[in-house]
Image (cartoon, rainbow, N blue to C red):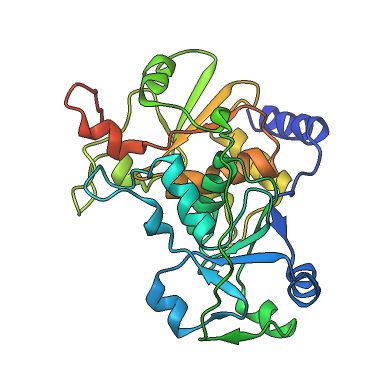
Length: 285
């Protein structure tokens, strides 16, 4: 079995190119920050964290501002509303965008996915590692940055998302894989906060941290491919990732699609929260 996993991993490395188009390194970022006046840098943390300290030149779009009030947890606002939020902050569909969070990779991945879903053409993730930022002399400040409002023209990449009905159609299909990116106790319906009663039928558990290193950075393409194979993930099948609200699943999406190069990956944006909100949907432990 171990020999088969190794052979599969090697085959996948030969099949897929080394994709990291979604990322920008610290040194390259330092040059962009200094020389590119058209750069749109987004800090996606809460307003109070942004007010304490952020990278100089960054605007603040807290990821929680992108969710509906009063709906199920993490429910995204309508595309037109999201476009207005980004446009009012100075973010256009074709802006050169770099996103960062607290270094967890969860929140920047989520906003990256939302922007790409809306049709943004040039979005990169920056891993906020304070040591590297200090070495590259990235300036920090507590003064806010405001950009001139622009129009964000939505052009949905519908293939990145899957609806609840689509997930129902995928359950137990032999050519599809459903991945739950939450913590194991949530998957088992045993979490202490009692947010979860279990998982969607047919789902496999693969926590989002499986694609991250011990320091919180994304693993390499080879490491992600090897990890995916250990969880029985066949890149030739359609892969659907979900979590509680879409945040952790976005991390898996970035890793599998952007780094490992798996071609057919979708994110269930409604997530477990939407699924569990309907009494007709089955949930298993």
